[in-house]
Image 1: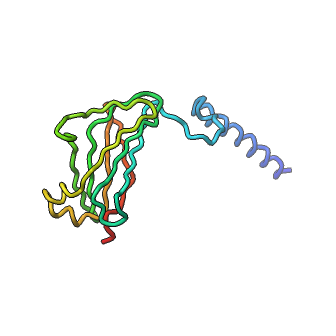
Image 2: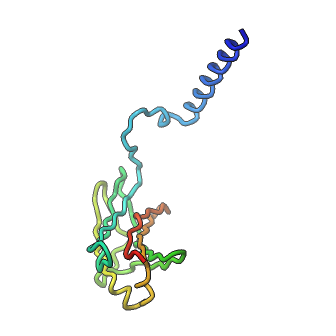
Image 3: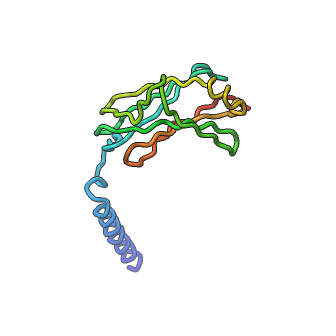
Length: 153
């Protein structure tokens, strides 16, 4: 008799707890599909290397994956080596200032980054093993690319 009473109390407690969690999340918490939820403002940054090891060019693609159009500020290129980071902001592209750039829905912006210009001005960057790119929008949201490996050591 005691075991049955404990089981009934646990079942009722579970339903009350689960119901309160569903109501606290709102209508979006009740969604049962496995599709990726679209956000009003979202961007995806992808990096493609010219070669597998020691690439000379990196192609950066910024894709607007959100519902609304988005204004992206200048990209910041981050060179990483162990626990140190070195950041560079792209100010001009081919001697013209184009940032902030407006991306409409499902549109992409492609930028070809030559690593030789960084290596010439700051020779210690040749020791950097990894690289990533960060961009912010005018709302203050930060979008990061995945980290790519430039060298193995």
